[in-house]
Structures are given as structure tokens and as C-alpha cells.
Length: 281
Image (cartoon, rainbow, N blue to C red):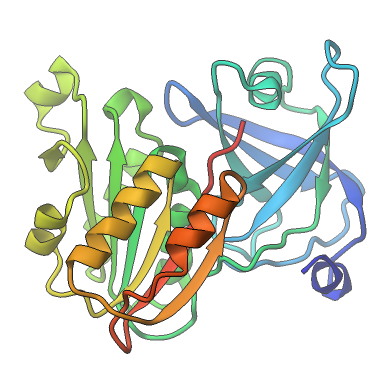
């Protein structure tokens, strides 16, 4: 993967200096960082769903820290965008949120990863939980830009609107593009959420709800989120009567457990399931 990333136009080996061109607060806990190359030269493109590595050394840490973050916008721009969730005990996420400001420089690897949006015409269903939304927005933006006729449904689960990143952006895409649909489930909606009716379901992204909003299971499914969300999505597909199919997944935590579950042959012929865990601190 990294060899391919290095050899494509604008690619590089190791780490390259990028300036934080813009820093945008997306929710109470998620902030986006827009990154442009310090040398002003071209940057390599990537496929929606891929990630890059950030190398930092916070002042209170003895060692250099390395973290992987999903790219959260469509490729083809003159910048990279990552959207980082601040975890309570996250060394790097807290450093990025609190210490890194516009104009600062970060060391970045070339984009890589094999969890990518397949370029076919099948309907795409993007299921995300929490910060797992980030590669899904990259996929959604890509479909809108390069496959405007492809049906795409984004189904997102969050605690409530305070922790729901990029809500307005996704809603705007759904309003402006006939091929885009968006649904939101809040497990703990706030009083304001109740008053504004700012979500479609109270609770989780369960099987009954998916059956009520999706015409069928004949689509490419992409999953991303924390481990409990991933396990629930596996179970949902299994209960939907799938038997065998195609898998593509990226795992950064509990890889042995996820891999064992992902090796089950659930999917019907022609039904694809794409798995990832984007859950970084």
C-alpha cells in the first residue's frame, strides 16, 4: 500500500510536512483539520475510505506518537482533511484539539488503506457510528461528485446532536441530490433534539429500522464505527438472511476478534459488505 502511495503522482515516502490551513469544529468532540503541503507541491490523490498517518511529539510525552485518521472529504482537492474525535484519555487527539492551531505544521504520511469505495453502479449503503462517519462522508462526497446517478444512503448513529458531526453538510446533500438519502438515529437525544425533531429514530441502527428505510439488502454495505457498533452491524446483516459474499475491512483495534467475526460467510451472492474500524485517539 505504501509503495503504491509513494509511486503515484504527488506521492512520497515516509512523512512530509503539512500546514494546518484551517481548523473547523464539527461537534462537541470532533474537529476537522485541513492540511496543505508546506512545500506547495502537488499531493497524491487517494480513494474514498483511505486514511493517512499523523506523527507528533506532544511536549509532555517522551516518545513520538503515531496515529491513523480517515480522510473525510472526497479526493481531488489541493488539501487533505481529517476529522478527529477528542477522547478523554487520548494523548494525540487531545494534543491535536488543544495545541495544534492554524498555521502549525504536522508530519503526514501518504494516504493508504484497502477499505475503499468500489467504483460500480450498485446502490451504496453507508452505515456509521460516532466518528466512524468520517470515511463515510468521504465516500458520500465522492459519489455525489463523480457518480451523481448512483443511489447512496447514509445511516448514522450518534448519542445526540451535540456529538453528531457534519450533520448540516449531509442534510444539504440529501436535499440537493435526488440520489442521496440520509437517516439519523440518536440513542440519547437531548431535550432540544426532541423539540426540534432533529433525528429519525430514537435508539440504535437495528435490523427492523434498516428494513423499514431500505428497499432491500441488494446493495454494497460499508460499515465504520466503534467495536460495539461493528458487532451490531454484523449481527444485523446475519439476521437479514445473508449467506456469503465479499469482504474488505480495516482494523486497528481488537483485530483478532473482528477478523474472526468477519470471516463468517453471511452474504448472499451479489451482496457486498465492507468493514472498517475508524476509532482513533
